Image 1: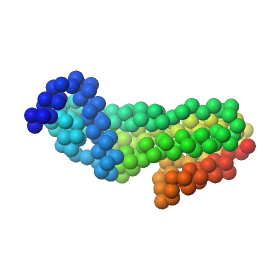
Image 2 (image 1 turned 180 degrees about the vertical axis):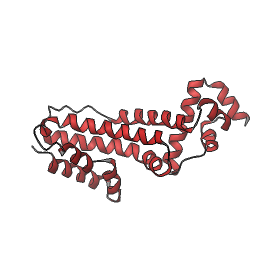
Image 3 (image 1 turned 90 degrees about the vertical axis):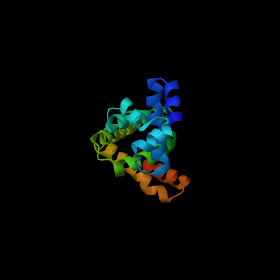
Image 4 (image 1 turned 90 degrees about the horizontal axis):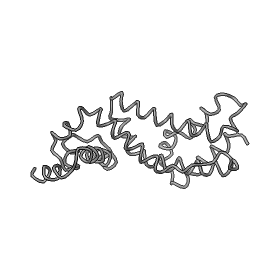
Length: 188
């Protein structure tokens, strides 16, 4: 207990919040379960009480963790020019989805399965909308003048759910599936 308090005193409030948030994300990835406040506190090097001093409730912690997870996802994103040839955009976009989905999968899987929080559902929906926007922007020229549902069809085919479903395959085979789906569904 003394160690947690001395570690906590050496950190400022923002550093402590960040440590608690990182502890939650790390435990979600490692355990595949929603951790208790006590295990989050232990991992962060703070007292259990400190978790609720820095966060009014678990939803507030989940929001901050969702924002931190979004930062991690954004760090994997490389801009792709819509002016590149279609095959190159498809290749780069498939690689981008792989990096994003591999980063998000452990946290998202647990969040979906274990949370009844509307806050978590909202964060997941925001992330999905961000990916749909990226898809629509990158392939706007190919979607123009076509069936208005085409972007939604492509989105469903290369969604996180599809990636997760294909986890029984090797990483290279999943990547190939996504390239083939994008090549087949997006008209040249």
